Length: 400
Image (cartoon, rainbow, N blue to C red; front, side, top):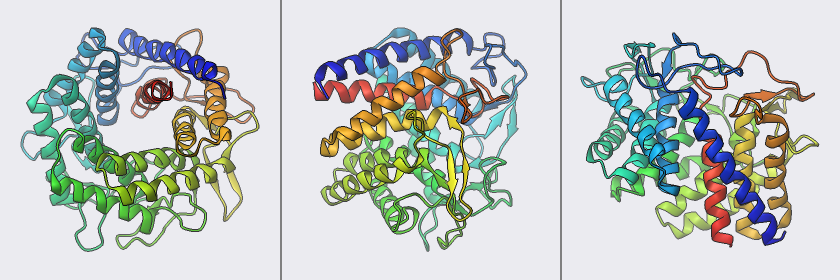
């Protein structure tokens, strides 16, 4: 591939990043009640009474902080400040520590449980915000949340982290992240985003206990979460790491491929870097089973029943852009860079809302829109697509 192709790729995603962030600043800010709206549909219609979730708000904070670090646009800093203030004023649990799972449209506590996935995104976002502001409270909140997870969620016997706890960090019966998830003690998804968060915190706080926690998580992935036979991720587990699911999630496979390597690089562990560069390629190769003929990445596959969920959601396509670019950076095989570019082309043709902005949730196998899903909502945030653009911009700069 030529440098001209990379320059075009970089230029297009720079424009796309601006478009994504401008959409969020235009449509998502809740002027009346503070923070950001909890739900916006494909026609940019706001559901002003929608629940406001921790994941949405922390991901907004992360994305606008990361975007500001990239190009110092003051509007991005203003939006990041808004997200930070709303989180500490409405989501922070000042009594028991950590962050509520959701609040109502007015900012009143709605669901007080401590979903560890959400706590991880708080760490991830506050660490990123600290990078651009050096706001000591942001760093303190990230460190305190890390300590709470190590005290209450970490399993010292079997390693890993339990999925959820009550407001005051006691065991809870319903551990599920969402209604579609299994009610098991441990999951790949939560562990992936804990290590992502811990790595980002370590980049601003070189603490030995944190470094050890990251190394333990890398071991968890090698020993239990990554399937040694097919290099896909196992998704759900018992407390003692017995596998409880046969589903393959292609988007998580390719996301983990680069995030785990990044965690090894952040702690500067040469043995882990070598190991996870190899694993990254293995996982990228495994992910290729999930590609549609037009370059889109299918959602899920169950090999025990040969059942496919042939939907093409926005976030696996964004992660494929980064994961295959990363694979190309490791071993320079053109097929990986070509796939990264194919993923971007698929996004442009099928997911980007050219008329009303941002990306659609996804399309069906015939490329018709998936009905009834948000353009912004509890799970639909500027994180996957915004971060993918930022990563491609950074990585193409290094190549050039």
